[in-house]
Length: 356
Image (cartoon, rainbow, N blue to C red; front, side):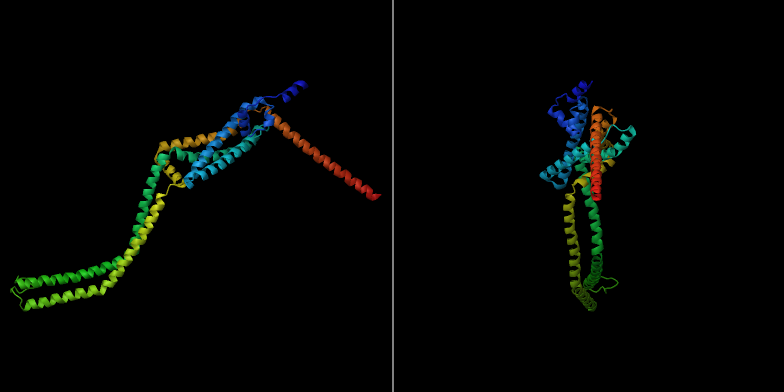
């Protein structure tokens, strides 16, 4: 029996390099796994899931950062860093689950890890959803940009009315006054012409020629023309000032509009694309369903190593791992006890020497 046990512990099983790599990805102890060949397939499968999750996380982060910085090298650098972080985090989540406790304790220990894995799955899936629905997102982005421009134009029109309103009102009052003077002058000119031609009306004598009535009407016409010219000279500087102020309002707002249009045309960052994807989901049940399935796929992929570890039966690896950890605990406790005993002995010896 002893010889057979030694044969089990000391037998050398060959692991190919790829299988070994996947076992390392799973977070398992490779030294213990060498002694438990029946566990190799399980840990290789777990390691494969962890590896592919890290690969998807790398691609997802690379695309997300590229939409922000539009720089391939920054995107690649951050993507690799993010992928390694997710890789090590997943390895820790899987390796921290112990199978030797009670089922209830395993469930309690797994809940925080499942929540964390679900959160990571959502983070990984969003950028990939943006890439999958890239054409639809770009179209929705254009719709959002045009809608924002229209809204901004409406706000600017309101500001134009607010800022130029007093100047426009005063200018209209002056223009109306000039129109009144012009109308009076035109009326006097018509009456003078009728008087000279001898056309009978309520204000003309009906006698043809330039008589006394025509002379009075000529004087009235000149007076009206003088009044018109004097008023135009009086308000010309004010009208020039009002035109400058109104032009200044339009110029400032036009400059602001062009700057805003430039900003809106660059409205294609990561947050803008998320907004477009959200609106697509609200407007199209098919896209919303597809996006939900994609998110569910990545959440399932992220939590599957935890679930596999949770539902799998206790195997030789778990027993050997518990034995190894228990041996280290006992060894540590033994060292502490020996250290305490040696310290007590030295204290007692020191006290006896003092008595002598």
